[in-house]
Length: 384
Image 1 (tube, rainbow, N blue to C red):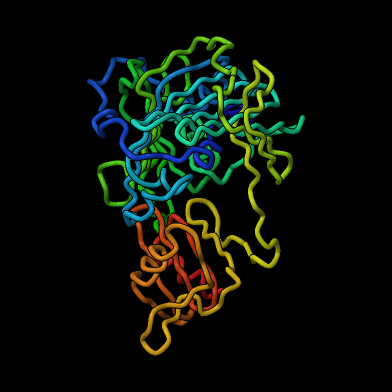
Image 2 (image 1 turned 90 degrees about the vertical axis):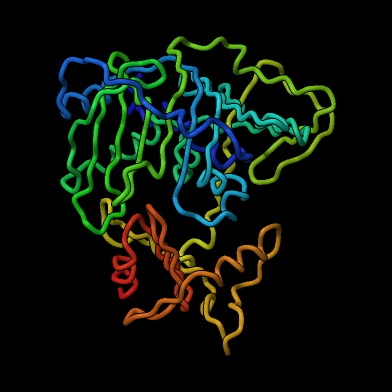
């Protein structure tokens, strides 16, 4: 099966970012350090692209380490789901045996979180909470969370390669050894100066042609702001037992039917089934959200209307009064919002977050603009 051509092959890992609550720690940053450059026969960028498109992956298991240093506030690292993967270093074990059998396990000192898919059965399990959720996937199920963060080098590479067009300079880099495997390096460089991405580097297994490491360097930086890499990899098809989930005694099992899960204590589902995170993405308010994009390629800006005008305005010097919010972290989020610098121009006024790889503009008239671009490009989009 083609690694990059068949979109359902490796996309399975992406939804785990939304299904797994990451608790800090993991491997040291030095994990990603490469050894001396191996001596490999020369290959051009065009040949490496062909290698990626024609590679076949029937099975895989290994350890994946992800590290993100995006310059985000500490609050983000304390959040669960995707937000937790935006900061710090995280380690996962992965197993892959075709598009309908996958498993990812996050291990920490306090417990284990697993997401297992076997056919149409999808299981998530949290040992600390002693809870499991089962969902039966539709027969035509495909990708379930394109918007989530990439968890493996393969998924990250597929997303980056989708941006290869005249706006991208494609070259080769230095060879390296990653997870004990010799690898070539493909380098993508955005041509648009408004992009905050300096380079994307993809280390490709010299014999299996599978991405082993994916790095994103911010403009003006010599160390990756985001990287995900295998530290150990085995291309043999994993045993079927890896995709079997038998709830431990006493575990609370929730049967998810559509958008309404039904809990059943002590229920024991069929043995030999597994599943993966497929929580439905909330569509929000549809057209009322005013979601659109401005520009294209690396300099694309996402524009959304929150429906809460004056969300960031501070009346009479007081605190900002966004739409009501509750739940854990709401007060911290409000403090974070109020701490962002105020900005204004012929586009209006609001608050700005400027990170290493992306910028976010929250306008006083209720818009959110975001992209891997400079603040100036956001201001330009806000005028439209």
